[in-house]
Image (cartoon, rainbow, N blue to C red; front, side, top):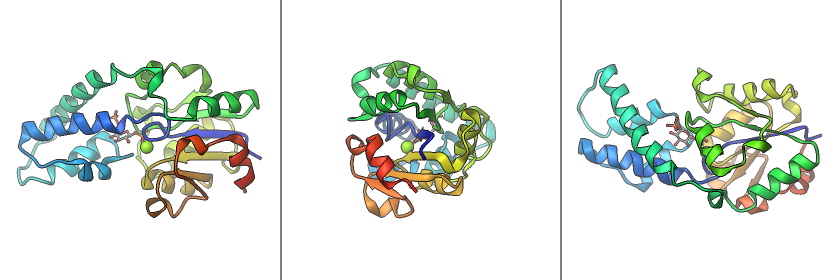
Length: 216
Ligand code: B16
Ligand code: MG
């Protein structure tokens, strides 16, 4: 039975991808590197330093570790400024009713986001009260597709992995959920979600009933 639901943030609870896109674009422009929406797709669910590496590979200049850290910080400053604008209206469709439904039915709720800004975003969305636990991305050694962040979420909730459902919008995230031996729900189109146990096109299709019908 479903004892807990573990949520990804970006692309599932809210669309911070747009803000990540704008912040990376600003940095890429400052560095004279190419950057567009198509390239941005590769960065979804991927951590900050790994995302930076992918962007820098577009040019032929090499950077020291110190320079890379300062570039990542610069992108994060742009991003932090952008997320100040987030309000509860930025919750994706169906997410608030789902959180409420899970809570009323005694299903535990966790957040497993690669973002070190997840606490700020959850705060801005005003949904912190629904989460039994939020994994600190800063304490995770291996990013998605490694299962670590989902395993830590289950440990923090004290729920066995076989009773957990993970919800993700990125291929790397679905792989992480499956590697953690959990039931994987993918939000998005089927091509990038073939490993998922259940695929929904839109977040407003996510209801406890739908999850229970498909859970195995
Ligand atoms: P930060 P998720 C991920 O969030 C984003 O999808 C990804 O684009 C971002 O680079 C990563 O968080 C790290 O975010 O720079 O704020 O620490 O999808 O795992 O919720
Ligand atoms: Mg995501």
